[in-house]
Image 1 (cartoon, helix red, strand yellow):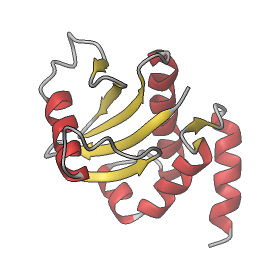
Image 2 (image 1 turned 30 degrees about the vertical axis):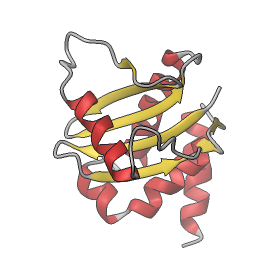
Image 3 (image 1 turned 90 degrees about the horizontal axis):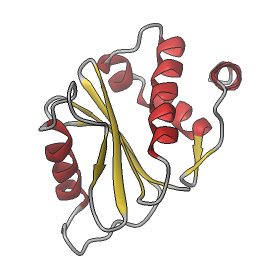
Image 4 (image 1 turned 180 degrees about the vertical axis):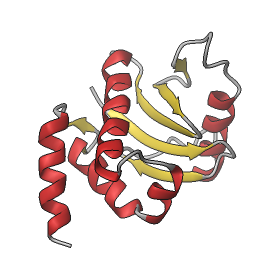
Length: 148
């Protein structure tokens, strides 16, 4: 069970958060930017009300995504993994950001990206899920935030 990447994009396809956990397979895409643009194109063209949040993306990758307001949260996961686990992790990530920032928006992530990465790093280490407890995450993040 492994996350290959986590991307947060706005409606225009501009990257707000990005974390790679594996080396990109460059057989189809020459650069990371082209890969991200392809992911955005695939996700943004879907009807989020009538289509699932899971996309068979490539030979080894499935996309799990969820749109919250103006942001797309996308995870690239191994094809054999259970999608619902990752969908719940996306939701947990947004809930923790909401609690931490107080109703998070794109500007919070833009101007406090290091705090959003701090949350991400508490939840995922080397592409593996580390924590699923919102309360525990908020306590640890609160302690880390006090160090600043």
